[in-house]
Amino acid sequence: KAGVTQTPRYLIKTRGQQVTLSCSPISGHRSVSWYQQTPGQGLQFLFEYFSETQRNKGNFPGRFSGRQFSNSRSEMNVSTLELGDSALYLCASSSGQSLNTEAFFGQGTRLTVV
Amino acid sequence: AQSVTQLGSHVSVSEGALVLLRCNYSSSVPPYLFWYVQYPNQGLQLLLKYTTGATLVKGINGFEAEFKKSETSFHLTKPSAHMSDAAEYFCAVSKASISSGSARQLTFGSGTQLTVLP
Image (tube, rainbow over all chains, first blue to last red; front, side, top):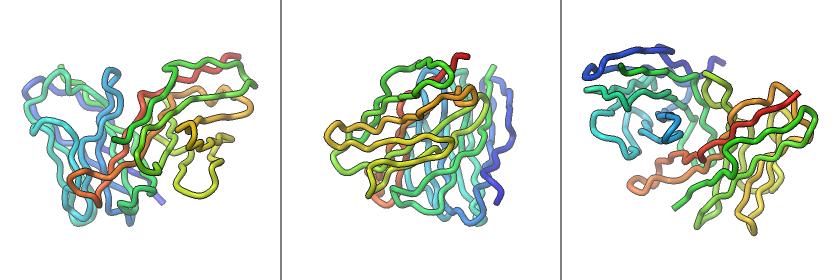
């Protein structure tokens, strides 16, 4: 069974630009979550999607958005990039939304804003 | 509010020595706890999880963790460290969304970087 696939692995963008990151969950998983990882703030929850609906959102500005498609693939978008958006963005998929369901993570997309 | 605290941002052990990584949780209800490992430039890999039942949980790569409600702890241990264990380890708690009780998110500790010395 293929794991969680995130593309691209690395991105370099300029301040003010926008970026779209992609995540393909494990086959059959309907829940996709996104996390931002930085040295200063650690791992922070961005949002979670289940069956194409955003079910939960972290404390991030509106420049961060996402969506989920009918095949459970998800994208997140960051507009008007700032230097502080440089981070590793991790996607995780789960088979359900129960609190005891494990999340499987992709390898992440390393975004560098210059 | 549910959260986790990892004591010690860096831990060094000699190869073959005991590994002990500390995690304490704060929760008003029985928590669901997880340990993840992250190798350089990689995502997170699940080591083990505690939900209900047995308080000693065995995971992959020889790791185990014991849930102690009286101490609100979920420390990760491995009897004998191997060079390949060098990585960053994260403790996490699963909590429900305030706005949507059916949704959930993982709240992570700040991580512990494990160094294994030859």
